[in-house]
Length: 537
Image 1: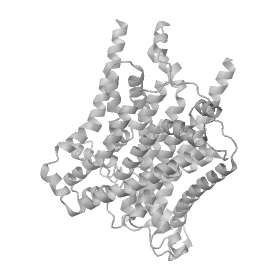
Image 2: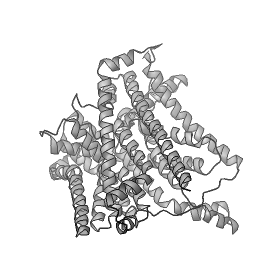
Image 3: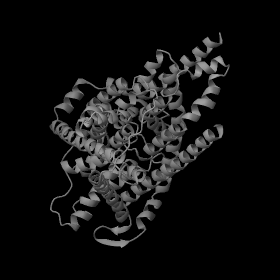
Image 4: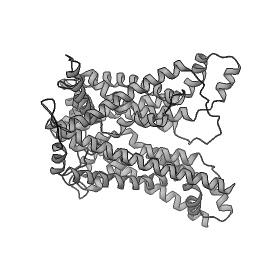
């Protein structure tokens, strides 16, 4: 009888979470699709700008994806397969572009390579960054860190045994790469391609800033909705932006259907090779220098009177930021990000536990529901929220921004939890039940202590992304609920790049501080875990 009650409560929990995901992800999307009429589609498809925007989007996204994936793979190999020093620091440094909004990356490109850019003037360049290659370079900076993290994580845990066996058999290094490494990287490679392409095709920050006359679909949607308040036209364009994200969703649903069980593998041993290490140093240093220049551009632009006319150092831009309630918007963003992170930890853990460890067939349905946000870009989800919730008490509140951020970023942290829980012994609950230990106590005393680092990673993911997101909240804010990231677009529209640089720096500093705090906590948690193991032995 007790067992049946427990089963009922678990199934009921699955139903409740599935309903929440349906109401706040699928229902707004369905409402948006239902509201689209044939004449709306015809009006967009036959517009003179649409064909050009599709072509531009495909060209820039394909080029960006190729460059980003190759660069990310090369950096991951440099970190995991060479003998270069300072790998931990370099890993953090090359992923810094992830900590600022994409529109900030566009701003930095203008500062460096625009008509009056620092490097443009320094090298007396005739051509500027605006146009196709500007979008590609900015998009690569914005997207390659995601692919790098995917490759870096996979290579870190690759088993070295097949390589040792191949070496004993006298198989050359290049054939080892083709026969062992590439097949091992097949899934991460496909995943990275989908992720980078989806990020690029749905991002309007970079092309809006430095696209010039090269209009993309995402920019076209932004202009239709924000500029002209044409929600129907924006919905039609949103449908086209869904296609690559939907393909990525299907891929993730298939490849992530079962969590991977943990196994013991032999750590890869890096052998000395001066030429390989030298090339790796050159690559990592070149990327790091470019990022350093990018960040330095923010500092230089934000703390001068007016570039390039008056290079006098000043704090006037900071004072102006404070004067127009910048600190209020910063406080709002931090409150939103903290609430999203705290709720996100709880919801992703409960959901992942129900899907990875409940053992019910209904868990597979909930698992697919939990990944649906992967198929809906932030700009589309934000527009869908406008169509569903406008005119309700929910619209224009802090709560709607918290919910849209939570739903928008839900899938990736959920998969972190899902994979961590799936690697544990599946018989833990059964053993606990036999010993008379309740499920809640097993979760509290056995399961949670084993995935503390995952909890911290999930918290960091939700916080950092909520601090810098623009697309999902562009249509939902009021003056009182305005996140600080939206101030960048406001300053850009006024051509006040100095204050836009200050806002970008503020977001970067806050995210870096959060990352540093998480690092210290993880270090302390790991130290306690090691001490506990040593004490027990």
